Amino acid sequence: MKTYKIAAIPGDGIGTEVIAAGVEAMNALAKRDGSFSFTFDHFDWGGEYYKKHGRMMPENGRDQIRHHDAILFGSAGHPDIPDHITLWGLRLAICQPFDQYANVRPTRILPGITSPLRHVKDKELDWVIVRENSEGEYAGVGGRVHQGSRLEAATDVSMFTRVGVERVMRFAFALARSRPRKLLTVVTKSNAQRHAMVMWDEIAVAVAKEFPDVTWDKMLVDAMTMRMVMRPQSIDTVVATNLHADILSDLAAALAGSLGIAPTGNINPERTFPSMFEPIHGSAFDIMGKGIANPIGTFWSAVMLLEHLGEAKAASRLMSAIERVTADPRFHTPDLGGRARTADVTAAIIDAIQGANE
Ligand code: NAD
Ligand code: MN
Figure (tube, helix red, strand yellow):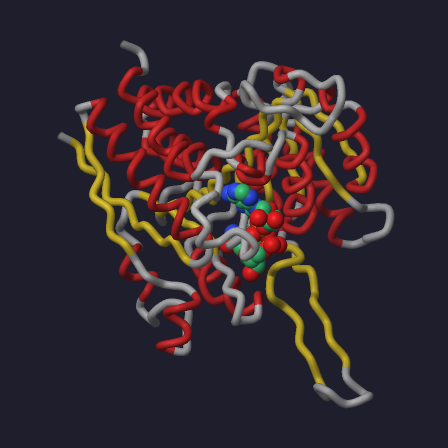
């Protein structure tokens, strides 16, 4: 029997609550399938670890997870520690060195979930956003001088490389081609940002020639927010820079009903390193420890993890279980207007897994 080694990194806040739920669901799924199993290695990295050790993960942390088949991640973010330390010390410290350059974010309105957009029904919003995940605005280039004095200056420099842009464009065109509509929107801001974004656009034109069967268009990021709200049916696959897609995908998640549902995969397409799957939400300080975090985003991330491992049958079994559970308002957590608790939703998912496809 095939055994997949998964590194579980819950991080902080509700990360610990939703990852515990995800591990339970994945074990139930493996048991139901019978042809594979998981071994989970749990890593207590994050804010509490930082308070003890002065860093978010051990110096050889990446070596400890380099040979796992995949990483299941919760959230980096602690109420007592500045966000740039938790983010750069853990999540980005894994994504960037592991070259997980394609951040894939599907968005759909699941059964039983109401979009805040009036008149939009489930099938009319079905998107995948590909976020460049290795450079751009989050390259980490820049600095501060004369800190605290009146002369202080600070820069964050966007860094775009031809290799970096080409590979994410190619990934997005290929993903668009794999979906029924074969439709891609390239998001840009080349009117105001006249260097890197112009190169971004030129590379899109060049890569598009390799994909003559994909219909694509170009959209300025500000206009894209409007299109997402006004004409969601006109969108299928989207590719955008690190910053632009970060923002657009939170909007996408909200338009699909809740941030608590949205999944993501940080993919290293060459499989030189493990890829990392996580709900897109953060530590949610306002609800942590209350047992009401919506675990659906983590379950859907587990679907992406299974697809990445090639377990298509188990992935679709889990996705059907998710859809059956969201369709029933008894299993809606407070973010969806319901009263269910994390444990109720998890139990319902496990029930649905056990019943699925019988
Ligand atoms: P957040 O996603 O933690 O929360 C935003 C809002 O959405 C909150 O009201 C929260 O209660 C709600 N929410 C989020 N997930 C939910 C879920 N599963 N169920 C129910 N409600 C949910 O974003 P924030 O408040 O901007 O950030 C809090 C901390 O998390 C910060 O430290 C931030 O840096 C960190 N963060 C980390 C990641 C990551 O590691 N990938 C992503 C985003 C934010
Ligand atoms: Mn974000």
